[in-house]
Length: 208
Image 1 (cartoon, rainbow, N blue to C red):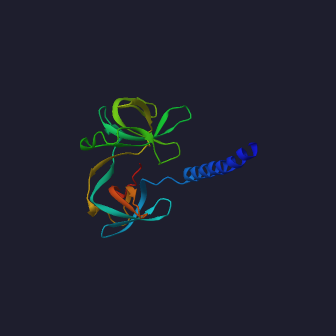
Image 2 (tube, rainbow, N blue to C red):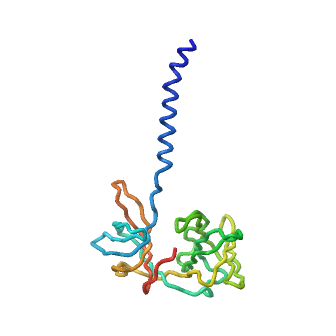
Image 3 (cartoon, one colour):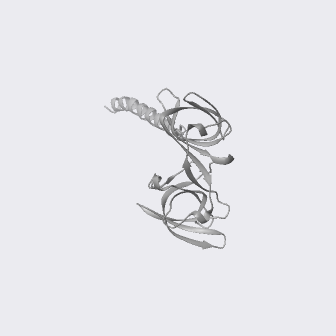
């Protein structure tokens, strides 16, 4: 009987190793990108060609209901208590959350993506979309206390941190040379589509 148990266990062990190897392989796959940042190379019908910041040529199929928004630079003083903002932050050496960029949503976009989550702009970066509850001037910029439905965060915004907002745009803004951030989805055939593109105005590179 011991010999029989051993012979039966070998296939089970082999199967367990195979499953573990498969799970490891899946875990090691690069996550599907959800954003493309780069420069428009051209537009051909409903296909938007973008040279990504990493140098890749990406073709995006634009959906019929795609929304285009302009991104413009504003001053830190334009961020008021009550503003609904998005802030990309990274941990500072002192444990504080340092803003890499801040974008102020117009009223018709209030509530967009409210909350805090990991973000792909920089290593260890986080995106927090929330309402400014307090703004305190410091020796080097401002500290914003932002509140969202599940919590709050203090964000340190330096004087050189890019601060932007959105304004209305349309497909006519999608011109070669414009800097964009496109929100994308991978289709079953491996291609990508986009239903929202942010375009930097006056040569601005979207900082988010």
